[in-house]
Amino acid sequence: MKKTVAILFVFSIVMVLWQSCSQTDTKQKETASKPIVSRGAKACAPIKDPNNPKPMAIMMRMMAANADSMRSQLLRGETLDAAKYPFIKFYLVEPTDPNVLEPQFFENARLFQQAYKNLFAKPKDQIKRYNLLINSCIKCHESYCSGPLKRIRKFPIE
Ligand code: HEC
Image (cartoon, rainbow, N blue to C red; front, side, top):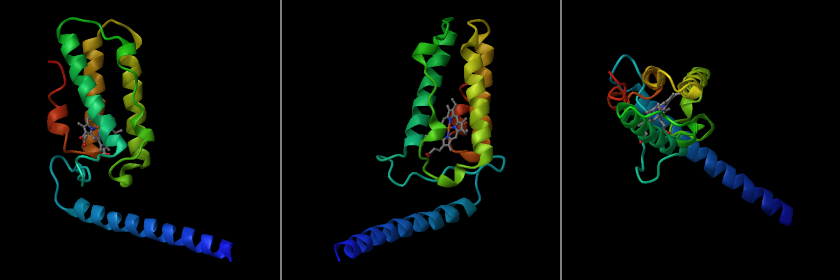
């Protein structure tokens, strides 16, 4: 008897979770079908509670802050130190919109990680390699999250 109760309990939790997920899904699809900005890029799913962002959004904020700081360092003629900027594995954590987790996204993430490694591979030509890194932020954002593009496009060093 206890077992049946336990099973029913687990089942009802699963149902509740499943329902709330499919509800957000429909909402996200509705948002996705609205006409959206710049070069056919999808906007990111709006963060419903800005004080409670998903882990991927938090990591992206850190990456943007790091890019900003790299830019200032390079403009001051300093060399970037890999230890100060460890690679952030954003592609392993939960995004606001789970629909982004498709093969093209992971391919963009792979190219981004490659550009990241190249940036720190040699102390020479870091400005050029920093700009290539920012290009790979832009490349992914053109397909998956157009909102921050305006900000990211200010990152390259002329
Ligand atoms: C492989 C794809 C990909 C790459 C590469 C990428 N991003 Fe993102 N970015 C995303 C996605 C998807 C989101 C939406 C995350 C979410 O809401 O969970 C996002 C969100 C953001 C946000 C908004 C965060 C917020 O407050 O909601 C900023 C800013 C951002 N990215 C900057 C950057 C910068 C700067 C780089 C490069 C250093 C970069 N991104 C590289 C896919 C990418």
